[in-house]
Image 1 (cartoon, rainbow, N blue to C red):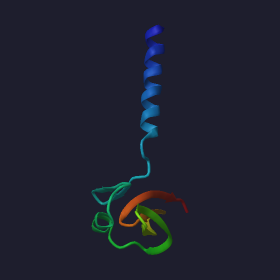
Image 2: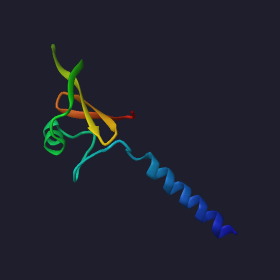
Image 3: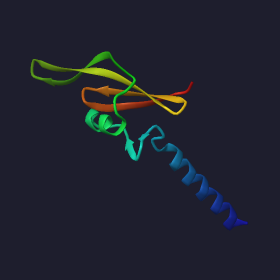
Length: 101
């Protein structure tokens, strides 16, 4: 009985760890796209998105009196029956969101 209870706790802990991992990685063919990837890698793996929009700007670096401003860009891909929204700050992928139909 005690061994079974410990086994259940271990299984629950492992399941919790697995569920806490990033579930929003994007698979394009055999490539896996994840947050932190560059636009170049996404374009090579997934091709051109069906939509590309600049949705804002962000201040990233403050060097003395200078501020580096980067675009926030959203790319939309349609994969099977769902859409994926990819958000870039400058050249880096920062967010992947599944948009269910």
